[in-house]
Image 1 (cartoon, rainbow, N blue to C red):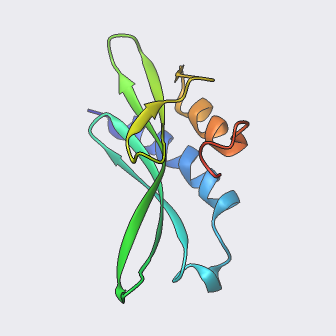
Image 2: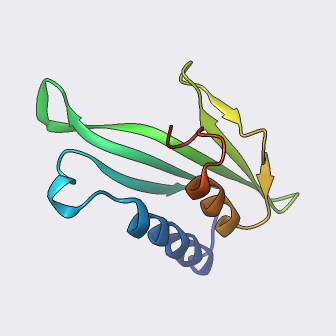
Length: 114
């Protein structure tokens, strides 16, 4: 769904967040932050080794944005304790991916980073 130019822009913005938020290199095999870009959506998540098998990693979602082409907006989501995605009511949508990243980074209401 995204063009190559759009993907580069998304990656640049998310890479800036990772640069700021990732744990030090010596801890990244125990806890790290990453993202994935898929059809029309971006998801930010942590990775850590599975408690009973350190060769396997589990992902824990932090935030998600889905692009709504007809409205040209990104819908912003967070995952509550029920493990379902919910609209982030303080800012349910943004125009640009950079706004999404800034919203997640600032986390004014403690929904993304706790």
